[in-house]
Amino acid sequence: MRPSIIKGVALAPLAPCVLLATVQALRDGSLLAIPIGTLFYATFAYPLMLILGLPAHALLRRYGLTSARQTLATGGALGAGSALALPLLDGFGKTTPLDWLPTLAVFAGSGIVTAALFWYLAIREPQAVPASGDGLRTSRPTRT
Image 1 (cartoon, rainbow, N blue to C red):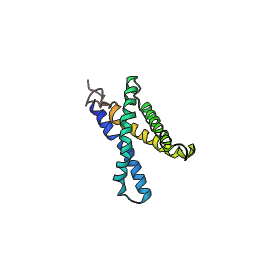
Image 2: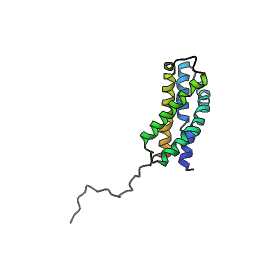
Image 3: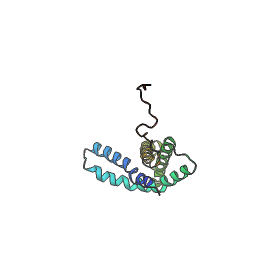
Image 4: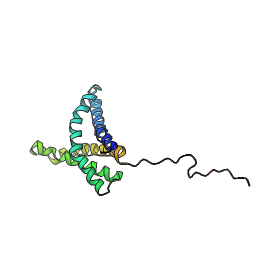
């Protein structure tokens, strides 16, 4: 496995965890809850990355679908899909589908944030910076 993939797997799921924990801590008025909230969200984010995200990346890569747009759409779909699994655990009986829309939006957004960071760390091709004098023209006229 390439080092960039390992870096993406290690860091990408952490971003939405910190974001969600920070929002929760600001809402509750306790900034000390950020590390605990981050660990709590990470218990869900990392398994989802390993179970859903890496196989999806392998499948997309196999078919050459590695653009940022395709990666972010897949991340959003996987996040929303994992949110749709929650009513199965809840038993469907206690809520209506409209009650799950905020959860669906948060999970889809978390999937998009994770996919964006993963794409940036592991998939994108860094742009080469031309060396000094390579292909650059000077504006000074030459004397003859």
